[in-house]
Length: 299
Image (cartoon, helix red, strand yellow):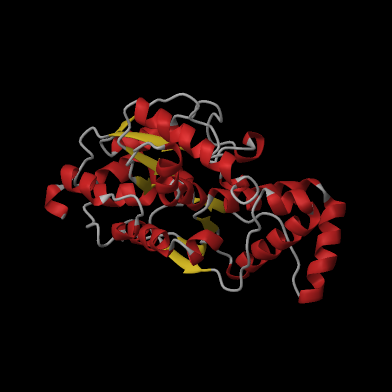
């Protein structure tokens, strides 16, 4: 499955309500490969794999199973743009496949709204799909402008690779696959300490100071080891690094000015897309300067 494929698109809450430009960017890049993304109608929050899961796992599984059941109605696989959403769906499939009695209880609840969950739906994270199904050769064949050795820090986040026994994509402690992808676009991926540290988004509302401290520590290490930009795979991580960066600079009296790119934005620029096509003007941390430096013809 690759070029010419069709998917139900589950964009998630953060992209739908706060970062719609990331959905537009991903659609634009996927169109380059003839991949069609159809909006999943009637879906709810995934729900997110931290708070709701901790408060009531069966409710978490039921809501997730409802979304997965909706996605099966047209027999298309599901494409996700958020690592947390993908994590929830993959864990749900695993847990309910291993627990028939729990699956029966959840289907008893879903029956009240005319639905029945069945396992086996293919769920894709957009970044993994690009690496595995599109592949590095086809990806790099469409590169028209390389990133000319720009040093960048990749933030994988907590939910993209874990739990590894379910996701089984890359080494959760020392991943290398997406580093290969980004290097193929002409950038230099900076290796920095504590690169698997959480961005702090899950505790933002319960302990804002600690949440900001976590992002500060990551930005400091990225900057210290030479990164000039940050690449993320998840809208929650994007919000932490982009939206909260100014607050962090004020709180800790520092200046990072590290532009943050969602992976498909970074790919799109290497494909020759203009910043206006990718809505880079919506970034809180100004990104056009570095784009102008690397791709002067685009501005």
